[in-house]
Amino acid sequence: MIVNANAITKVYRRGNEEIRALKGVDVSLAPSEFVCLLGHSGAGKTTMLNLFGLMDRPTGGSLEVAGNHINGHLSEDALDKIRRENVGFIFQQFYLMSTLTATENVEMPLIWSGASKPGRGRQLLDRVGLGHRMNHKPSELSGGEQQRVAIARALVNDPRLLLADEPTGNLDTKTRDSIFELFRELNEEGLAIILATHDAELAERVDRVIRIQEGRIVE
Image (cartoon, rainbow, N blue to C red; front, side, top):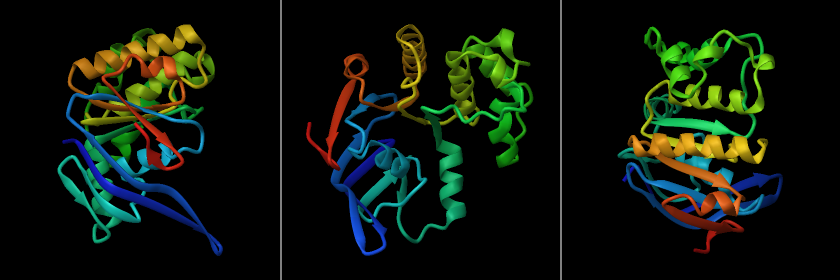
C-alpha cells in the first residue's frame, strides 16, 4: 500500500478548546489507484491530505506512507525527505511565484532539494500541454494553464503519490474536465492519486470514493 492509515485521529488545540478534526479514520490506497475523498467543507478532507502528505502528524492511530511508518520519533528532516521523495501536492490556489516563468516555477522544488535534473521543467510542461508557454509568467496564463504549471511542479520529483486538494474548485467546467483528464492519464501511467473535492460529478469518474463527514468515514 502507498498509504495505510488505521484509527487515525487528529486533535487541534486552540486555547482550552479541543477540535477533533479526525475521529478514528481507516484508509488504504494501493499503488496506481485513483481515489476521491468526497465531503463538504470542514469534513476533514484537508486534514487527511496533510497527514498523508506528511505536512502534519496524527494525534493517534498508525500511519504508513510509501512503506514508512510515521511516528512521533521521526525528525522533521526525515519527514521532509520521505515527503520530497514520494509525494506531490496540488491545491485549489496555484501558489505560483509571480516573478518566475512557468519553467522556473516547475523547477522550484529541485532547487529546494538540491537535485539536478536539467531540462526536467521543460519536459513536464510539454507533458501537461504547455510547451508553448514555458517562458510566460503566471499573470500571462489562464487559470487552467496556471493549474497545469502547478501539476507539472508537483511531478518534478517523480512522486509515487499525488495529493490534490480541490484542484478544480476555481476552474470553469470545461477546464475542470481537461484537468481531470490529465489526472486520469497520470494515474494510468502508474501514479496513485487522492483527489479531495465536494464535486460529486468528479467523484463518479474515479476508481473509488471515500466519503467523509465530520471527521469520520461514512462510506
